[in-house]
Amino acid sequence: MNGFPIFVLKSVVVGDKKAKKICDKGREKVDHNFFANLQLSLDQLYSMCHDFKTKPKYNKHCLKGFMGEKPPVIVAKAKDFKDWRKKDKEKELDYIFRLYTRYGYHFEDLGLKEHQASRGDYTMRRKLGEIATTYVNTLPGSEQMILKKAGTSFLNTEIYYIPESSQIYLTLGSAVEVGWNFARWDIIFPMYLKTNISVLYQGAQSFLTDIPDIWALSPLVGLEFELPGSNNNRQFIFGLKAGYQFSKGDQLSDTSCKDSLYKRSAVTCNGVNVLPFVGISYMQFMRLQLYYNWMPQYSAAHVENKFLLQLGIQI
Image (tube, rainbow, N blue to C red; front, side):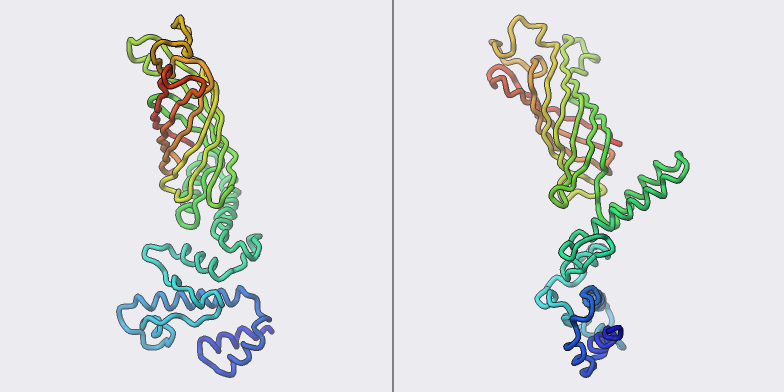
């Protein structure tokens, strides 16, 4: 049993017929990961040699790859697999994990089950992040922030992108908002969900102009999704928040927003407000978001709901 992999290699690499007969009888004695690794190695070799500009002389498998042939089938799932070559601009680790997923590699050391090969890169990234964080926490405080950010950025770029578990942000624009998103859940892999709580202030322009002192303050709570396709450079987000808007503008009118004879701006009304939003962030630092401030208790004939565009930072 211990020497069986040698016969597999002789059968595949050298083409030894006697070794092949031994392999056919005792294949079940060897762990599947051995065959997955062998298939991966052959795929890499054939893919690399296919891109050579000059004909290889000494390795028959490399020569076959150069001529455009497919690698030998070691794992059953490789038989009809057409996408075994490395893609243009595909990172080496992405290529390796893609093939591991195809061939059902068992990442037992990472605590995954046999059918969870597709989570190999994510789990390895998370484990390395935990190790890096443990080490950085032993360093002086002045070094921790820089090294933690640099380490996280490297792991997100080279292995797998995972968003921060908790961030505080400040945005300015059509409104001012201070918020906190936290408690990341990996709900629909690889979509991420966070709880979001914030305070939204409308009327900051009153500090800069002579318009009446009208403002509104809204404590909000909701959910924020980070979508598949996000990476270390850009993150796509959308969400929904709700709260209650306290407006000073409602005190300046003799009639309520519900009974108003003309269409009033939403910022002048008290009441429940619901804010769906979309946004994008850069390097998990710059944050651009667009809210729609909707007050469902008022009809469109009485209250004009507003879009709120904001730009800020998050840490």
